[in-house]
Length: 117
Image (cartoon, rainbow, N blue to C red):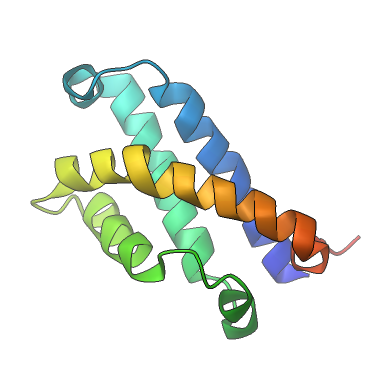
């Protein structure tokens, strides 16, 4: 049940990133203080949410790039030296791929996404 809540947060944050970054060129994104900060906040929420999933949930979602999310999240959250690169990789690759797989998993394994009610 806890995993369902985390996956909901991940899904909502990923959709927010897609909306915020839609049609925005890399240079404009990196130079936009407000949009950049919000995307960083959403990427951090995704990374933390995925990191909080239990081992069974992680095993049930094998197509997610766990190592890349961990590395990207670390750069974003700690404002590491490769933060710009991590932000762009998250927006351009990790988020779209993660959203796609979450949709597949939600259809095939709906029990993972159930929340306590």
